[in-house]
Image (tube, rainbow, N blue to C red; front, top):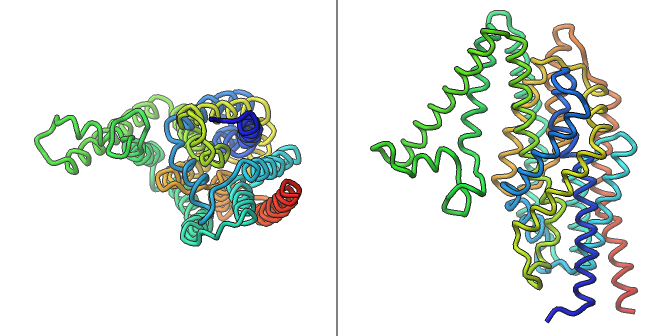
Length: 400
């Protein structure tokens, strides 16, 4: 029997979660996916905010379960988050992210939420989950080097006059197509409740081969189809083909952002769901709706900041930035690791920007980058300290 007090506490926690979802939609997941496309003048700021909201909602529903469960149950060992702890963690994190949005600086949402949840969990009496922290820390540290390095190499390759863009860009599109074919969606059948396009086609039995070989064949076939389709488009109009590919990349990153970032908003609610008959897909849809509203109402400001303040991007550098962003985002979703899309995108923009700077092109604002890195590190420490301190005070008042 759920008491009125328990129901009321859960309602407050749910409202805090929606506030967090709005802040994420206005900041991280809403601003970063189409920042490169806006910088390349492939789409307007307002239209980007609208589209990213819709795609983020779909990503939240179709891919949000892994990160949601990790944030809710794997960041603290030996203790289960209570409703007061959830409320404190979400309010602290959402306030910091919202302040970043209005100040014009991209606060790393994953840093902030992770710090807040861990702070409240440890104040509750839990123990550090060192194994999970190692996974998260490894991805956070590697992201700038891997994403920035791939973006730099890709941008240099696209600027190489010996490699025609009509050949290089379709090949890159084929690589992206191969990734899309193998990422998992909740609506497709699979051993763990979700499946990929290639895996689903391989399971139908259309080819007289084993499942691994069939999956490889379908992956190569769909990759080749995407590559040839873009090659034909670029043969008619090279600039138009580049812009359309960039918009597709932005859409894929926006979808991936929804799948990852929704877990930062609603993940802390997972320990509370056992007392209520609320299925996880319904909670994912609610979180996705919060992301959508945040993207529509608050994202344009941050989109402009990322697109114009960090680097002057052209289509080639934008493509170079978006490909590693999409790949890293899907890796994080697959392994259930909370990741900052601000860190992913900004690192990739820096990498592609330095490729142009090394050849006399537009550069990157070093001062802006320095302030951003300090904001990321400060948000982790500040969220942890505030969450720990506030929950300790709240717990003392409740017990008193």
